[in-house]
Length: 113
Length: 111
Image (cartoon, rainbow over all chains, first blue to last red; front, side, top):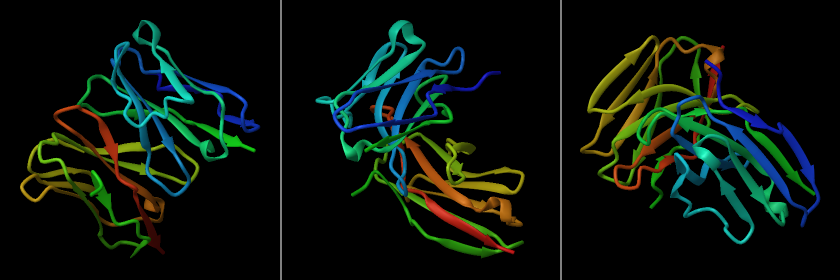
């Protein structure tokens, strides 16, 4: 069974530029999560989808971050414009349902300079 | 109060000993509890899930859940150097069903 796929693996951008991350969850998984993990901290939930609907986006900085999950499968997370403090690893995870085990992709390491 | 709290460590344990990792959570109606292992530079890897009070064993790992005390722990028996990693506790809340992580405990196994 294929795992959660994310791309790109690494990205370096200048502040005020825009960037987009892509995630393809495990086949059949209805729930998709985007987390931000800053070095030395635990993952912070940015947004959680159930199929193509948003379950929670309370910690998503909506003035600069946006996410979508069209057709309830793939998802993209966008940052525009980026700030230095957005430097982090962005992790995508998926699970069969909202209370079941979640599995992570390899993550995208973003550096904003 | 943080939703999920862990001691950040570092926790140092001699090889072959039992490592004990603890986690407390604030939402009484939380229903699903998970332990993840994260090696440096890698993404979190699920190692245990527990849904009801009591103990759950899987190989060298035992998860313990006490909902009355809002406490979940992970025991690693016969600790190996390869167990050196950061261990993340995650809790799924019944109401909004968010999956929330603690800050993690860094564990070092000393040969």
